[in-house]
Amino acid sequence: MPPDTEAIAEQVFTALADPTRRAILAALAAGGPATATDLAACLPITRQAIAKHLALLAEAGLVRAEPGERRRIRYRLHSAPMQVAQQFLAALARDWDSPLGALQDHLDQDTHGAATPPRQARGLHG
Image (cartoon, rainbow, N blue to C red):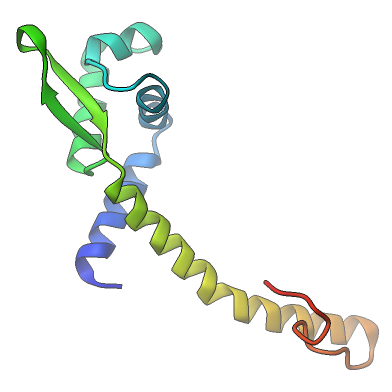
């Protein structure tokens, strides 16, 4: 994975590790763009805490700040970094599928005491 992609995935996973940030993203996904004040009204933390979490989410590229009315900043979801993280997870899953399938074949062979056909020959995938 290219270094930039690795860095983006790391920032996304760091941002998603916190349940409050996941709740903020869920609120933005459900309700659309919102200010820190709007989000504080529907989440059990202060506007100041929301603002700190939004700053980290913005740094990870998961939200974008947009100027709103009366100098209020509205935050909108930005999906590109999430797609990078999804690609990282998909590549990781592909890398694990073959070794896990081979392990399962080996365990099946040991359990049954006789060679069983490989997973693909049995019609099993992944």
